[in-house]
Length: 421
Figure 1: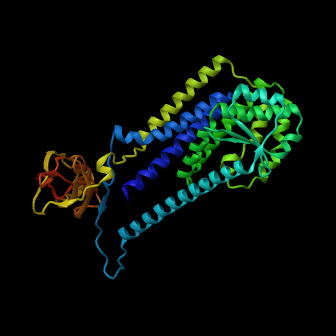
Figure 2: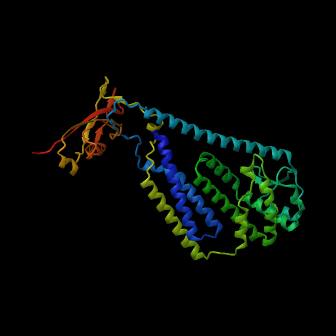
């Protein structure tokens, strides 16, 4: 299997395990503090993205597969398994790239749509109360009215804009203040770049349900945190919840290309959280945070050890060297630095199996053997073939050279098994 594809599969499995453990830890911890939840899930995302760095700390190059040559059956049809696997790998890569490009295309179309919405909108005339909130939280934010959206939305970093639907002005002044405060808090917190990064990550891992779950948890926690900040500034929970319900229908009707950026999801969970007055004590907050961090660190370390990526790192990975044959002219064969003797299995000793087996292997430039293939089998029933492969995989070499430069070299290894009389 292609090394990069195998590393991607292992990385996906690591993400699944870590995000699953993080979800269970949050549920058992009964975290009700929105700020802690947001920090926690961002930490989970950062830990997941840092997982490939484990290959730099302990690189384990891939591609050291083992092939046993089975005797051919007379009259049986030969099936080119390697060719089938190579074709399957190409199909998988095409599917992954096509899905990511499709998702990125959708995001680009959404960005263009945002620009169009901004251009087609008109400046909003706000009440003095809303103007006061804007001057306190985000003076650079510009309020504009659009008849093409169903709920308010803010976007942009250098020139932030808050788009308001037409029905915003039909709401009572108190509800208008709460809605405007929510959007301005997003602008003041500079949440827009985070949203863009999250959607880019979702596009890259479009095939991974755990990543979608992680992004949803981050976005839900952010919205719940901003909800709490709004209530802290404008203590009219009823008016705020009424405003959220007023835009709930619009959330279902929103079908623009900018949905990934504009839509406010999680209304049900947000309303449920707002309806509860559960407050974590400072002591419980600290202890919960410590336990969750320990669980996260343990899951990351355990996953990295149990499922090592072994991604080829650096220049050798970017420019893989061609394997040369040890019989080619100008090639200096690798020299054995240390070797491990194969062990007899009790079954093979009882059956008194003796003889020689032949293997080929690629000695990498770091001196480790890989691509071990048995070309002449001795015993597949009692485990001598496997013992030989296990032993050879522990050998260490001084790398071979071609024209004075270290290169991967394919060599032939002979191992003998004999019993004393």
